[in-house]
Image (tube, rainbow, N blue to C red; front, side, top):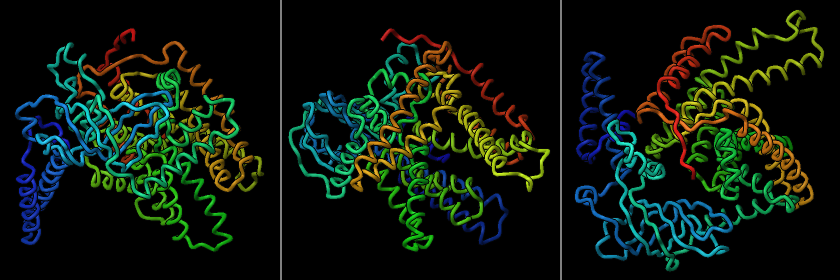
Length: 555
């Protein structure tokens, strides 16, 4: 990870081959030190240096920057390319253009042969109602190819002027962190070079079927149907602009991005269905787990396989495997293993907002929320005067409900500590009331996802009436959630535009918070609410000393 960070921060190109060679030498030195029984410091230093150098080399290979474009500063130019669709951002019904991320398969312009294999962000005109390109489809396109600098976010530089900072497009930073080196804009689709594969086409058909099922019974309330599709399938393009603003300002927009919450709820729902079938079909535990993992992967693929969804799938799969197989280390080890696997496959995800938010919040839940909930349950026990053997079912029900409420509060507090720092860092918004909004909306989102899952199962089974019933039930909950989010966004002080005074302060604050949480978890947090004082005080100090409030332009 250290090698990735150093290579990311390095402004110029790095010799990937030399870095890899140095990594091999360092690891060989560590092996020799171990064989010769040298002091422990030698083999540790060699191993750490080798891993760091290999990480830096991997970053350079993943970015695949073209030296001539960087050295000569080549300008934008017209190009004719064959682009393979890697990820398509679904357009709204009235939108007359499409966009997404693709890979250049072929450059029909002779002087641009070197861009073959490069990842590009593309946008091209389309007629409303035309079919949306499918992942894996290859299109012949004509447009303007513009190189992206390695680090578009000059705001991160301490010496950036206000004029330079104002010209920064945050989306360029997202593209660069995702390994995209070019923009291919003002495009026009000339024709299809190759159709998508059979698997990709079946996934698209399943997505259209799921979208149709989730709209049944809500034909007269298209705005509620759009909310349901956005939450269950991640189709945020169906949300109206004012709806997006509302949830963003209330700090709850994450409910519509396929993430750990969505994948976790769907995983539990799938496990419940397989549990019922296991009793009838006598499925062994391993077959149930394999089937559940396969069905969960299909859900992720049907929703578009966004990086956050794939990452959540890996995370949830590791956590469920650790729980079912009773592996040593438990949840923290499973979380660490999933993060390592994700970075081995896609190391550039380390620098994306979604990766840092996902693992930051889940780490906060494991390191702070769980021990805090246990401490709170011990301190504020219900019926402490009554022996547990004398409890009736009503006592047990009340105790379970009380523990559930305590768990929600502790989860909301832990997630809020991370999101307050990350909200300013990534979205330029300080949302002090998001804790209360999330405390209400997150459990309700679980109900909506569960109802949506049942609706999809019933719809595929031909039970359209039952599917419509669950859609309407989810619609009632969504109507209430919409009202709560709107009320929270309209409250005075619900959100403030803000930013960190220097670009490095945000990542440093988030990393510092995670270090504080890890140390507290390792040392067993102090009893009671005193354990919250250190991380909460750290966040308060960061927000007071590190951020400044800004005024948004009228637009």
